[in-house]
Length: 324
Image (tube, rainbow, N blue to C red; front, side, top):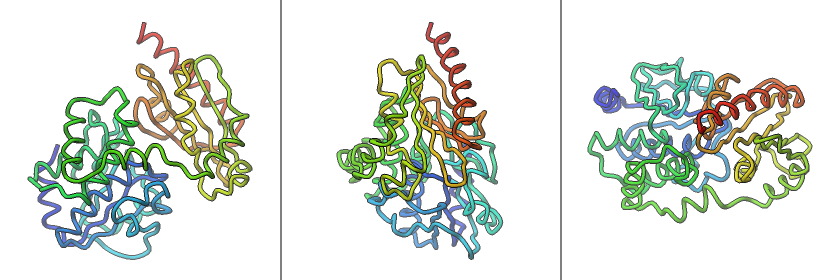
């Protein structure tokens, strides 16, 4: 871990670009805004960007309103990529940033990271990118403030599904305690990031639930464009449906197929401890963690389902062998 080199690069930079992966989750936005608020307080010129901006459920985070969804101009001394396993995952803003930044720091915890950039803060044992941001700030002996702590706690909570994933350790809980002591509300972050949903998501579930199937230990569902339009949703989301599916006792693996307007299919994967969906996501060109991963693949929906379910069946078999 190049903590010292990363700190030196950040101190030397007057202008900093922060980017994360497309279809961002709580860790992507949380780790980015944690650093954004820290660097702004240091007097840096900072731009935070992600394709299409911050999802609605994360807009409660401090400074979320400053995140831009497009980059058309600007040059930076330093670009920091957060929670992105490869260049393609950073989308259009990442491609622009790479061409217009003098140096790149890669902060990530995915085992599939391609090690792009000049300085790497990569640890596949970390539960989230937010954990790595916390550890980096800690090595710099930074005094944690509430505007930094709230996003980082959000990243920590969302990527561990509320401290329920198998990679949670005592260190994870110590970091969470430190962030709470700095002013982040565990109750509020849990509620906003994991529990609260707009009614439109419930409406979406009403249309999608008839597609739910349980094939052996694999629970699956489809979100079509018709479902999204019926729920009056402009974003492509499952509203957390994949989390509901994996909660079934009989399901060891869950998958939701989300249809985009261009006929591509976004695949969200979840698994119970002992079952690895990260390898499936990686084979599909995506990434993630053993228990929560995703990818976007070519459609149509029927062909995508057939391709992914075959891979998941193999993952279930391998998981059962490991557990046995």
